[in-house]
Image (cartoon, rainbow, N blue to C red):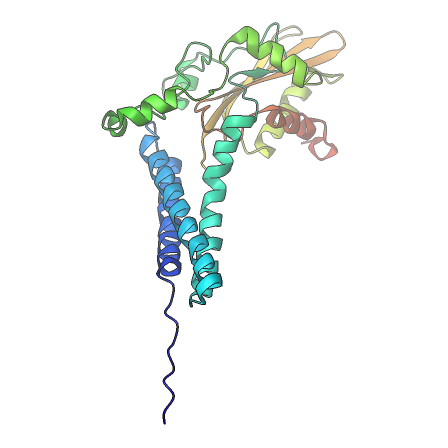
Amino acid sequence: MRRLIVEEPVSRAAIWGRRFAWFSLPVLISGIVLVRGGSGDLSPGFAVIGAAFLLACVGLIFAVSALVQIWRYGRKGLGYAISGMLVAGLVIVFPGALGLRLLVMPYYADLTTDAAHPPAFSRSTVAFAARGGMLPQPASENILAGVTSGNIWEHLPKVQKILQTLPLPETDKATLRQRQRQLHPNLVSLNTEMEADAAFARARVAAEKEGWTIIEATPPSGRFGIGHLDAVKLTRVLKLPIDVTVRLRPHAEGTTIDVRTIPRYRLFDVGSGPRNIEQYFEYFTSENTVGK
């Protein structure tokens, strides 16, 4: 008498979990490419990234439910479920980090080493053209500018309304300055004994080492003339622009250097903050910069 061997079926949840997870990966990459290549309206790219996050979450839910089925009923598909969980987790990490940044980390719509008299951004024609015809003004602008603008959000009014209720970055100048003094009391002007011309040359080299794109450079003129560098720094992954200006004030004992940074897309910017200025000063004072 032949024994009939009944094989356990493969968990359908494991199959769909892996499908959703793997599908979310190219969707995420497409969203990042759209944001990196966006010239003004970033909403399509962020919408695609959000879609990838949702797809990965669905895949993760399917994969977890598949593990439960495999444990309880002995179904096949453990490899499918594990691979789905790993890929979904990989996709969720990046949008999840943005969400965590939004909820728990402090924002700086306007960060400077001189809170009393912050450096001014250049208003020259060259600087305006390099910034796309805009002058950084964080306190008066909509914090969601460039993110919830565009035709795509006109068809999603509920989503736009939800975004408007999020705990967004602070834009009030007085509040920003007070928060900066409390959290970063050491973020102050850099005083050096170097002459103005030497300090300006080193400031430019430090900006280049940081990967900044210098859009205007005016050396100090005369003993008490103020020099400045205007530049644009890009975040690592999404390549979101951060406007930077460096001011050099010569005096009898040397030169005082101040830096100011304003991210253009503050809601999703994870590259701005005190570290940008601190690292720039580290490059400036580094021995590797001497003599450049």
